[in-house]
Length: 531
Image 1 (cartoon, rainbow, N blue to C red):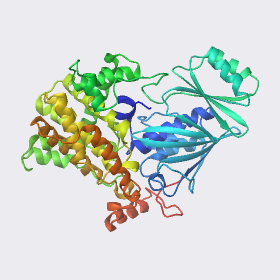
Image 2 (image 1 turned 90 degrees about the vertical axis):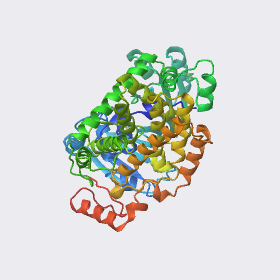
Image 3 (image 1 turned 120 degrees about the vertical axis):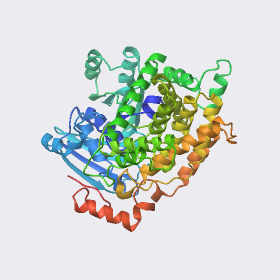
């Protein structure tokens, strides 16, 4: 079983761009492709299935930017990302994008053909939500690479001797996958193989290529990984004689998951909280970006707040302001934390940071609240999804609401049971949320849905603090939520082919952007731009 990490799967990555499923995930795919080829490729062919989400959103939601940035070796918060087209041109990379039937089962499937210095490879990769990825095949060989190990791929027609060498000389897991008449040995290890080991491998008879891939995730995996619990019910059993708060249980979980100390896990979250707070302040100072359908809304909202012209509700209005500020930073290519995704990056931090200020919480108490939220996110990542392409917007903003509700209870001094109840209530209120971004920009109705998620979190936190009965346990709510998400029609799961995205006003906005050169039209009528 895959064990989610607070910092791999839930709170993070730190990134620029409108979509973690597109910008951050494609950048991570690009980084692994770069390692596979030993540097930036000379030529790239990127293909998407016409029935998936990428065919419509590849350019507008930043997947092209991320993939090309990754091929150049950049990270997800690199300030050069908005200027990637010029950098790719200067690097001499020739690239094409095609929409063809690739028989993809997942809506975010990339088929990438790469060439460099006369060598060619083909990669099949998935974006699975929140910036997480999986490479599922290389040159037809099925495998599984998520970026949480040092990976060494050895192409050989003598796999037995290669595996014997690995077992005798390298402390790592090895698995075999067949590709035609040869075999690809995949070595997963917690540290890079030494130069001596690589040289010895290269000297083995039948070895034709060795391809080391570096990890792309902040928290590594390892052999025989174990965690103390994977559901809320197991958490309660684990805590029966410990009486720990939700944030303390989060530290226990992540220390076991990441093989790090509780202090290291704390510091990682403290760093992320600082980035979230900086994003609020950046947004409140005003943002600007050409490829954007909403102007700066937070400035006017703040002005009306200060003039007393809004309906009274200081905390509620502060939450709206902070959510808006963070979402505007995202849309202006500023640095944000995907929590749990970039599309829902405003809901959780906006709700928690505004509530923390209203309650006079310390920085330490704010970090505790985000740790509590992260652990709720672990259960969601393990048993549902953060990908709107798979589960609709309930997977993103809905999840953010459940996480934020638990965090607010933590801030207010509520009990562990009340935090779990708040998360259950907030998730119950989120079932059926569709993902229908206007003009394929992650701005509208995304902003409103982030605000709705954050205010839902506040309401449900107060309901839980007043001991409202959620009736359905959190674990069962998560399973039901996932089932509902999978039942949402494909057109309403981030394809740009349904809901508000197909209204006459939305199509007019889309055409205006096309006229301004922000997007282009493919031969299939799907909108994206190929440079």
